[in-house]
Amino acid sequence: MALNHLEFYAESLGMRTRVNLILPERPKKNLAVLLLLHGLGDDENVWLEQTKLVAYASEQQVAIVMPRVDRSYYTNEVNGSRYFDYLTELLNRVRQWFNLTTERNRTFVAGVSMGGFGALKVALNHPELFEQAYLLSAMVDIQASWQAHPDRDAWYSSLFGSETAIKETKNDLTGLVRSWSADKPKPEIYQICGDHDPFYEINLRLNKNLLASHFKSRLKIVPGAHEWRVWDDAIQDVLADIRKQIS
Image 1 (tube, rainbow, N blue to C red):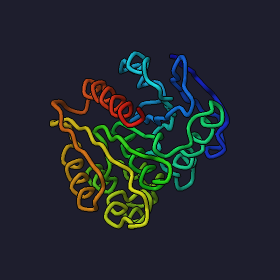
Image 2 (cartoon, rainbow, N blue to C red; image 1 turned 135 degrees about the horizontal axis):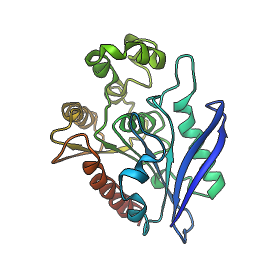
Image 3 (cartoon, rainbow, N blue to C red; image 1 turned 90 degrees about the vertical axis):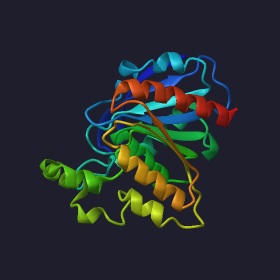
Image 4 (cartoon, rainbow, N blue to C red; image 1 turned 120 degrees about the vertical axis):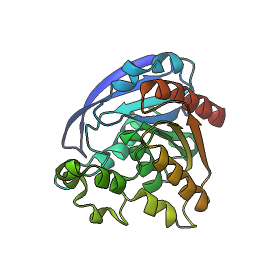
C-alpha cells in the first residue's frame, strides 16, 4: 500500500490544509473510497497513530481518505470556515487526483465520536454520494451535548449559532431521519458502540429512530468505553464490511 501525506489549498476553508490518504499498492479500476473522519481533539494523523490501519488496509481495494477538520464538528461555522462543504470538496478533489470511483455504491464514510456526527451528517445531507455511513461511538445529538455541557456554549454558538437554531437544519440529524422524504435514497447505517461508552444511550435512540424511518440500519454493541481499543477493532469490522460490499 501507499501512504500519502498531502497539503493543498481548500476553497471551502480559504486556507491550506492537510489530508492523509492510503492507496493500494496495485489499485484496480473504479477504486472504492472511504472517507474516514477523526474525533474531537484529534487530527488527520490519529487513525495512523492509534490503530493498525495501515496494516489492516494493506490488502484492501479501497482508498482511505483522512482529512483534518480541527474542532469544527464538520460544520460550516457561523462566522468561519465551511468545514461541512469541505468534505464534498475533498471527495471531488481526491477523485480527480487519483482517478477514484464516482459511483455511490462504492463510496463510504466513517467516523469516530465527533467524526461519527460528521459521517452521519454528510451521508444524510448527501445521500446521492454515499452508500453507507459507519458510526463509531458517535456523538450524533448536538442539542443533547449542548444541554449536558453548558460550559461549551460559546464554542457551540460559534459553530451552530444557537441551540434552537439547530432544529430543522442539516445539523439536526434526528430531525432529518424522522422527516426523510420517500423519494430520496437512504444511506445504510452501521453503528458500533461500547457498552460503557458515554454515548451508548444516544446511539440506542438513533438506531430506534433509523429503524422507525425504515432505514437499513445495524447497531453492534461491544464491550468497552470511549476508547481506541474499541475503535481499533471497529475499523477492522468496517473494512471487512466494505470488502464484502464491493467484491
